[in-house]
Length: 283
Image (tube, rainbow, N blue to C red; front, side, top):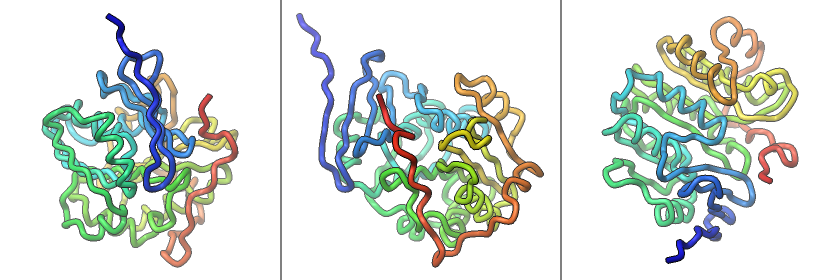
């Protein structure tokens, strides 16, 4: 009997052309790209395997926001291939999760080709992230993960004080806001986003690869914001021991990094910077 090899799946979705490509090294693992830009990586047999560096850092944060194994009520803005919802369902069974993704066609493709395990308790919503957030009830989430990209850029309406205020409202008092952003030196966008988060949250944390922080290349940075101190020691141990080590910045060093950056008003909001050619390419 011949075992059929998985084949790539290409489909025009609402906001571009999505492609699911099998990983030749992992039997049921897939890379999702949209218009050629890598969006997500999923291993259906091993949902705790996080391939992308930024996803691993978000995973480290999800591990330390509450005691191990405790179920969380999570809201994900941006769906991709549902990598982090799968991770949370595996590491914190019983978690209740909502995923908001503007591209309904992409959600349909992922649900059809990469179905979630039975009993995952993940609800999918095809909607604009800010519009959905503004209609969400107060204090309903333990963690909010913002990983929204229009193409390769964070949309402008998800960068302002008004947006951050809505995110803070939806979180419980002990909740944590997490975000994936991309920038390069001199970090005008990243600094402004930290200043914007500081209008609503007392505790800020930045995780990034040292080469990005030194201004050597464009890359992803992961932010966390909360009303209470996070377990920096545990987070630092995880990021330092990772296959792709990263630095954790917080406290006075992070305030120095923010410098004189100003919070972003709706009328001044702009998308995150356009990545340089090849920054997130594959192959």
